[in-house]
Image 1 (cartoon, helix red, strand yellow):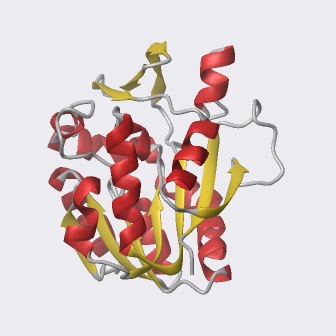
Image 2: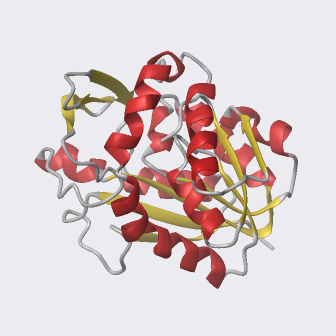
Length: 256
């Protein structure tokens, strides 16, 4: 999960303190997450012939490291230097070196990474829901679009907010956040805010604000900025029950 720089977007940079970054790996559950997700994303990217990949929501590095282990040239970016520092440590501990790692705001991603530089961009861990403003979301996707090479692909995932808003929150706790001994759930949930609380075994408690994006809205937004051939997966599978999955992955392509 990423932290973004502009403090008007849920105050995420302030919330991703160095203390929270130290706890984040306990929530992620690296080994279980890589075993469940890593092969899926690697296969998805390899099927499109991708080589150069940017993880723009690096967090503490689980997906960036997993993709690097699968043979991709990975650039790691995040809005929080605290999270990136932890990601670099995690990568080094596993013998992985990123092509680059740098703080980057999604709205200015093309200024940081350049135009038409990457075969694929991944934005995972429910990160895109940190943006609270429609125009920010659109502008961020436009910047992402510019960073991709022609025919490049974007993979973006989020919690299944449709189910949460329509039927209440529950989770199989089998995807994305697989750590043991961590209690996760919304303490406030409405069409404009999903405030999640993370409680750890040592008594530490943190909260994050997210915007509960509906699936069709994000699909339409992707198409609005120019992405084509948008495909959706539920908990890494197709077909899927829209009301029966915890996370939704959307895959979209830049025109050739």
